[in-house]
Length: 209
Image 1 (cartoon, rainbow, N blue to C red):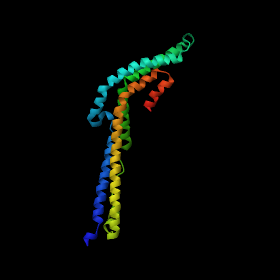
Image 2: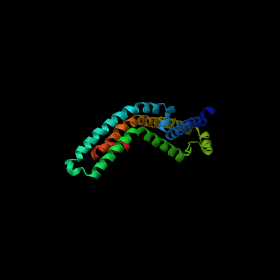
Image 3: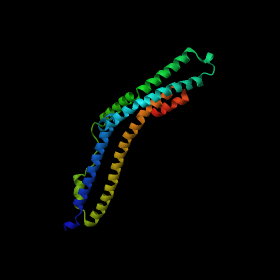
Image 4: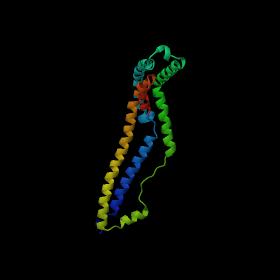
């Protein structure tokens, strides 16, 4: 009797789940290839650019503070330590820190656009999709009631796992964009530490990494 034939129901369930998974993978690749600058039509990035001047002002003030800290820590005896190469090194460090603070968003924007283009070039719109082979579909259709019932239970468990994994993938990608939007403005403050000594400048290195 057809009521005991579960093959069609199993195939329908698997095709629905595989379709959901393929859509999620497609969305993930589309998001990974998208620069945060263009995320959600550029609205979040516009907010980042609107608050960036505040962080630049704070970072520019901290550049002077960290420069003084670095100067004091490296100059125990001003007459002996203040050679030309030492002064030149400090001025280069000061100028580099101020340039990074002022152009933080521009640098990040160029970096994100490059990374997005690289992902698009590597993926080239191709990725592995899940599908049921015709031979496998024939086997599933011809399963008996007992085997079909077991297969239906396994398919239901697989469906739950695939749906959970799909939502976790989307959550991870969206959380990546949220984290980027939060940390980008802080870069102006982090880069200001380059004007200080080596111990203080480790903050900028940690931020960049």
